[in-house]
Length: 334
Image 1 (cartoon, rainbow, N blue to C red):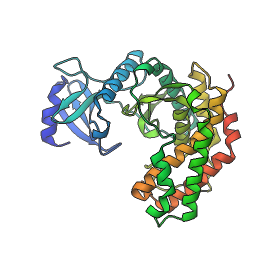
Image 2: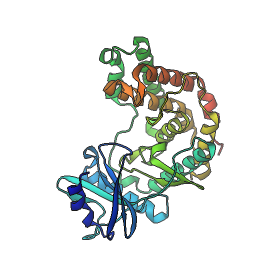
Image 3: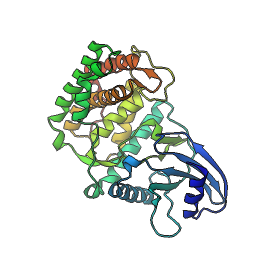
Image 4: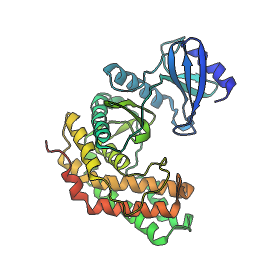
């Protein structure tokens, strides 16, 4: 955000005299952020990404945010505008929101953080369930025809990628979709966060202290988000990873167990047998979808080259499939 833009935007909130503004280089570059220090404290100003600023979706997102905030759920305080009761500023074709800035550390890769993440995810799902009737439609990663087509065309699009590995990735995606689709419509739904990964959580001494970025909330089976969270918090696929892990590294069952135990401890309704059965299949699907989208669009994933990431993903997908029963046994009994 440019200086002139900030001078026009910031006065719409009553935060007192501003002493400093610092760009925050985190998350999507399509949604720039700055940290503002003022007489009223520290705040995070965010310009929302254009693709995610549909009025009905943003209105629901802010209603849910305020509802969670009222319960004491660890989410940054959303600041109301000075001139009216709303929390979203629409100005010159852009949308902005302002929250209290929360200090916290990143996920440390240890079981206590994974358990806290699982507990907070269950809490989010239970609290958001009462807003299910009001949630706008939204597509997650499950059974996306565009991704299925991209998987089959991946080697033609990116000839530098191994044809056999591309074929394996497409096979993993198709088989996991087929297996998870059988009972999909009967799985318990809620409003999911939509992007529950280590980059969107901050941690303190007692666990999760802030859940960030609510822009992809939507109605979806809760097991879809749980499966993707298990993947994100227990397998190093983050774009922030400086060095790609070796394909032979063994994924952590301890972290999976910690996250599942945290979820089971808090969830009002224990995971049903249909959810437990589908869990590993949805993990493979989430992994394959993330890989296909990144490789098809950019030919790489963050700092990873395309070939090393593709090799890693295929190895991990096969590992999950081979250890599906072991993963299911980690789910706490009711």
